[in-house]
Length: 173
Image 1 (cartoon, helix red, strand yellow):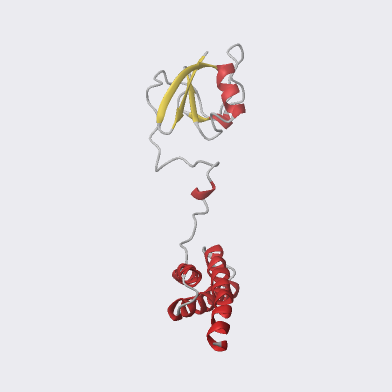
Image 2 (cartoon, one colour):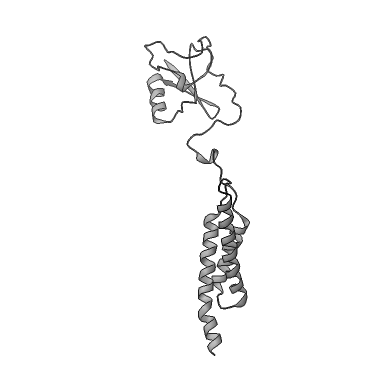
């Protein structure tokens, strides 16, 4: 018996029952994807079909009557892709403070023998600590940029450490 299936609001098939069953087992056709065969009244989720073999009666939850496989059901919105975690947990925006901390850290390391980059390194350390401490105060609130703030902190401390020999040279001369 020939089976049709719908993926991304597009009808595909026909395929044999054993082929469709293999596609479901391999994950190519999800249990939530709709399937239809001649004799079924309406499309049904693949998970509701108990048997795809042509020589046995197929048990489904909806009664069988329709003869037209071209009527792919209208789906509301996009079907869910359960393999894509960003569909359920989108990344929160990165904090501006974390980004500024990283930029200041880079400026501080690049020009560690000038006054402005030293101040940038100090700003990187302060902003990095503020960002990381705010995340600790609101643990239930999703925030991204912890790694960015940490990178700003590290670069800020490196800029400060690289400035110390320069200051010693200035003071001893």
